[in-house]
Length: 118
Image (cartoon, rainbow, N blue to C red; front, side):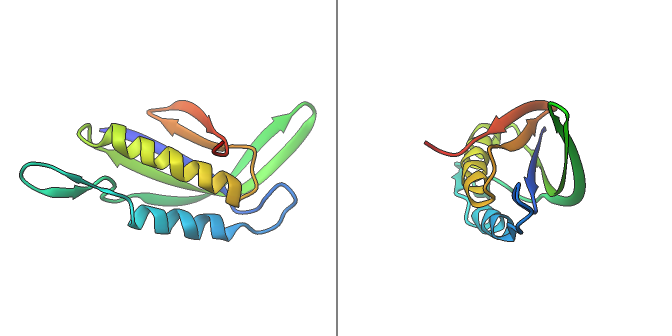
């Protein structure tokens, strides 16, 4: 089982609400492609948990505080590569919609910064 967490802020860096990034992210999860196996068709994401959190980060001497939602997924090894690929694409879209430099993602506690699609 692979653990993936995606951290998406609720406001942009100017304090403006970016709830549309979350609405779009949830819609994208609902419409994520399915994996067709010999015996059955299964969803890449069968379920997930959302936690509201407050994140703190520092840039030089400036202290930033972000209200955010953390989306946590537990992926089976049979779908992990495809599901992570799809989640990264969704993070790129959320990065643009939420007006962020990047979206923070962890895969089994290894950190990744996902920027906008080029």
